[in-house]
Image 1 (tube, rainbow, N blue to C red):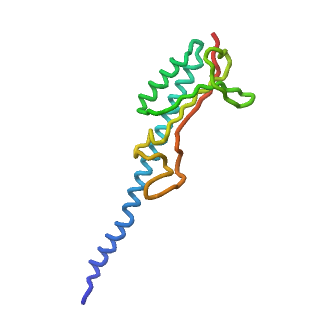
Image 2: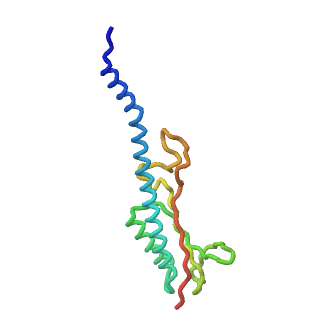
Length: 155
């Protein structure tokens, strides 16, 4: 029985492609997801900045600030987020819940937005740490978030 060497090489190439192609496809989708995560993180940061800029105005209200944040998050097509309004104490580096009626000029107002990762994932995964076929690999966060602090303006 004579073995054709050319057909044997084609068989090796097919086996190699079958082994490598799934890994390349997974890597491609991971890179897409990773880039998407950074893009969404930037959009969340933009909403936080818009919110804190509104919150420091002398006539600011929680409803008005939340509307700005809601509009920016809607433009970014992000839902399921939580917004916190905090009073930042620079001397202790601590935060407490902001009371909008007692805030004074010079107070440090912090706005924080957090989003569960599955609300922004392009692939619909809960985090980059739980990828099917790969398992638990520490590749990214389970939530995305941002915060910004600015001083309240006077009248």
